[in-house]
Length: 167
Image (cartoon, rainbow, N blue to C red; front, side, top):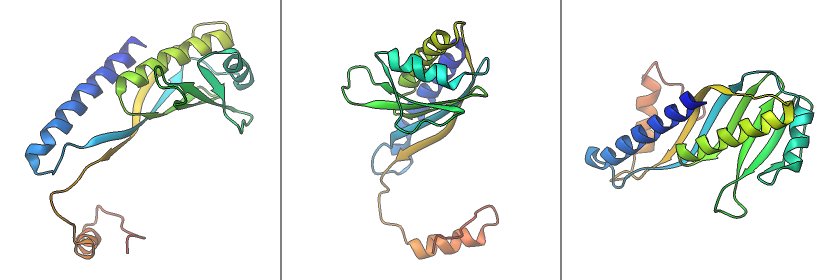
């Protein structure tokens, strides 16, 4: 877990540097991170039913409305933000999805809380490993409008771009 927290701290520093320098590169305002989605693996397989039961006993976690067999869909309360929750999915094979973060430090907090819940549910420590950013949503404003037909035409000419459905 320590390596995962270090990775998230490094991501936070890199994001701050990249977003801060973007104004100098011609954007109208510094971009803002709207959501970070992470993936990880638990060190062992997970009993989804036991994890859901442990979440129901927890003060921080709640169980999603539509549980299904091999996955525990959970919500984790955001500290200091009543009513706000992050999404957590834990699959029986140990795959983990963490969604809805705006700050890597929040993701590190959620990962530590999830490890504690996994340990409670399984009776043994469950370290998360292979923590990776799967998606980073960033919103920004350009200094002027975009000619969408010209952009679509340029993207259609680029063999690296898949533009089906952009018309």
